[in-house]
Image (cartoon, rainbow, N blue to C red; front, side, top):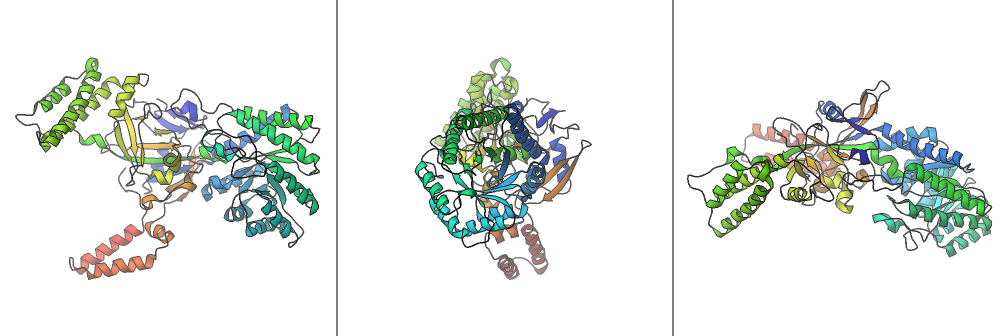
Length: 611
């Protein structure tokens, strides 16, 4: 079973020897990398970063657009900027700036903090674009960036911002930022982010406001600084048609603005939206276009419109941060417990005389075989409901109830083993929802997969090894937060995830959560004060091996509490005082207890087990 790797994997990973491996010459196994890191004492979930996958995505974007430009004899330039909002963590940003230098790959900022980050880290001469709402300070920062020599464009979201730019330009030094105008298209995207586009979207200027903006720029002598228009119709555009419609509209607006006298307007910024394929269990891809088709359509449509309007072919900018960042990160978390493993024959406490329903369950368990597995499974589920009803009515005792639960679950496990995970059989899949196994996994969904919790965005999940063995248990994944929403449930239609039946007292079992490099880290919530997991960067060497770099352990509890604005010194003093006042233990014990508490405060909050 390859867990849909052919759909979402993009040839980044392969299965070799029953393990998930990086698709490089040497094919290092992710499980071996994890064990290498854990051998140094790191526990809990791990976030692995793979810079070679960042480079792959950047190369794919630039090479496809350069190929399309040659194919259609396109005169405009191509460039891209990475929107920092997608992932601002230094372990990613430093890598993308370093890798992007050869391509003049720039950065996009949407706040003062992000702009300062871009001003500090962006490569020389690489573009910086600034989107989002702006106040006087943010606009002043944009001017400072221009005065520092940055190639910066401030994209205007409203006429008041433009008036602030005009006012600021009269107060500051001669270098000025370029000016972009975000256009409000009638065209919309698709999916849950479609509201980013359309006439009622949050951002952009209407046609009337565009005309007013151009006239204002002319009047104030700043029309030559107007160099870009920008639009965005939504993240994760799965269908190409909405983009083509938006391009046609934007291309015509571009041509009309140039005819109005904006002769230095040379660029169209498409924003983000280039989709990532998250589909793991469907029969075909959710994204209905390739990167080659995407690049071809953009170049061809903009060339056609420019030629029809007798205008210069525009430079093309894109901001596809999800596409660049999502594949680079893999969350790895150990399974702590399989809840049905408490149901074993050894724990049966059958009596000399058992209630009939218990005797019938025992008979089902001893006589189940492949020919009657489905029938007996149905009977077991029905009998278990009967046991619970009888218990509520007082006709069976707690020992009988325990025996009933154990026998029903033993029958379920036997049945599953007999008919396996035949996913083509709808009836079996439906049954699997009733007998699903609960896997307790050492991670926080709210911290590491917030889009699953908030938007029902699925992420590919698979075990890191044992892939040469059949996985027979329908799996529901529970995180370690005390919140019932912290679950990825088995769903026969949407998420038919099967995992292995493992004895965690004898072996370790790790799950990989893939394509988590976009948004998940920066949107992660500190629910239960579980924070960003330990991370490591994995460099793939030219000789095919790998090197573990830049391990950054998850924050310790004292730092977490400090971030929450607690006075950590007061906490330590209070603990010390309360221990010293305790009359339940002697002085020697008090010293030991205090030392133990300080160790806990200095460690991270994830669960610590052998696994």
